[in-house]
Image 1: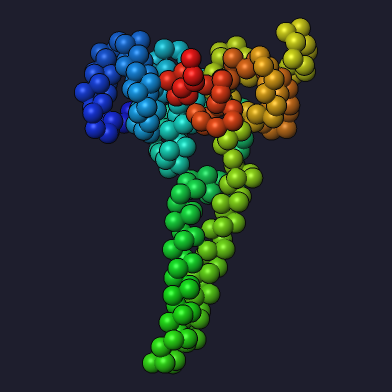
Image 2: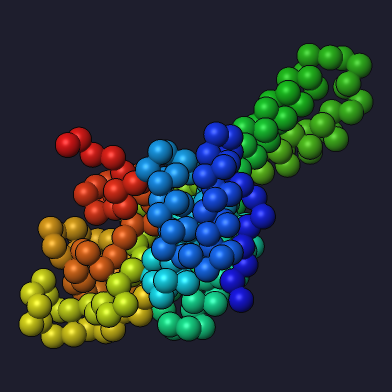
Length: 257
């Protein structure tokens, strides 16, 4: 059974969000879907809203769309347990392809860039203050060895945080990550409908966008395959940025008319 969030949208959209939840609980999934998307069209972005959009998409037999919204919720909160649990439900149903993260990469995937930046800033300030205090205040002279050790450890944490940020951007960058939303997608050897099939792409599969090309997109497929997919069959996890225009949910990316 899919996990739902007890949370609500931030301020003014509370009543609308609650109405969407009520429609979902009553089994009116199309109505709930429209309500949630109306909130997004107004610029509301939250992990709870993305989670509930995933849930209603799943109920509408759109497992790929559901996986997309769960992934987007995880972008906002990398340790969002409900979204990760629901992704496992979809994985069990469709057997989608995913990039497996191991070791330090799996650990970094549960930290947001903002958290790493905060750790980096705090540890740098601590190191600088400790070193400065040990040099300026004579009464701390006897404590200098301990202060230097503490300052060195803080500096090491700062260096590790900076490395983690760089690792996220190079190994775990969600900017190029896309999700297969269609129920009948496949990767082909070329950007033509009659090209040879490389592999079927179950809904919810993760892909790395390598080269967008109009109606077709060249992608990397886990573990080590590549192929062309119809652009309409996938959607970027990041709802802003280079891959979000023009292929993104209209409510998430507003374009000039």
